[in-house]
Length: 63
Image (tube, rainbow, N blue to C red; front, side):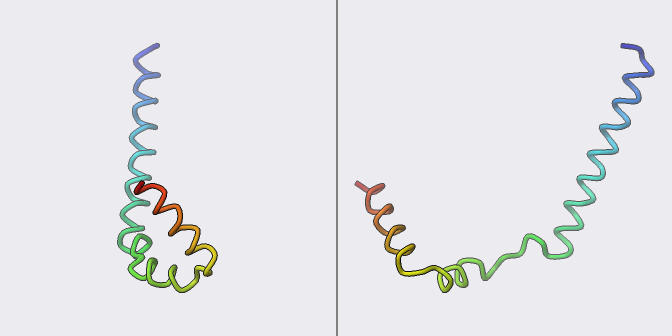
């Protein structure tokens, strides 16, 4: 590889990394990762059968 090719690859890699960092920071600032009510609402949305299956699976793993 030539030095020019390595410089181009390094520049493109840094650009992609910077874009990923910007997207991550945007997600943090806009609240994309805040899911405080996930577990409470998830419990309300689950049916009785799913909850019973989860309970049985939990008992099996404890044995």
